Image (tube, rainbow, N blue to C red; front, side, top):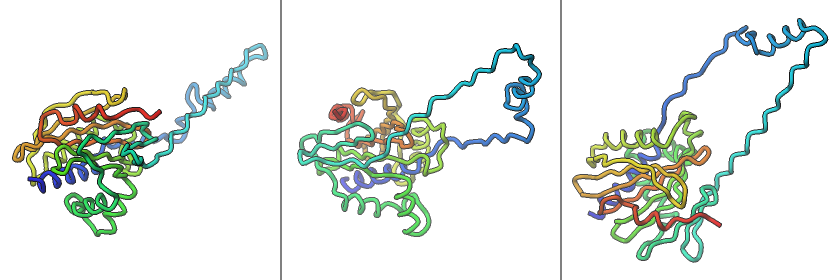
Length: 248
């Protein structure tokens, strides 16, 4: 049972990594298309045709786009508090829980990389490095409850720029439904608050083992943050997410 729980958590981490959005369609502008009313060429021609008494065309300057925050990896303090400045969230470890070390996390990812990816070990490793950051795995000794926090680099994964949390969750569920090792059942989705921030959550059940999993996701800039919680009771994470707070 414990092995099944551990593998289920690992599998969902990999499926979360592979989630993707809608494809983008490029819009091509043919030569000459910009010479329409309101375009620079049209405005220039109209301006020359105006009399000297005409009012000058005002120049509107767009404000510069805000600089997106720089992604940073989370850390664990000596007091066992996980924090990530990028998301602005921190997490207090519940009693009886422990964090997986970097070595343990790397080993777990290595064990399951072949579940979803094809190609050489080097190709799998490079995909993981360029697309996602496995920021945290923590849980009880039994494996339920347990939690994984992942940040997927949407731009590096070449996912559509108009990806939303709902589309992301639909992609995860589509992949889970194809899994032949565990039979997943979709139990519902909703919008919840984690430390005052809006997260979309999807609840699932691994029917053969009566294991529940919840996927909480939120888009931060170019990164999709996923909090996957595995438990032996319904609505996993409903009590655990209360341990998240805003930094500062």
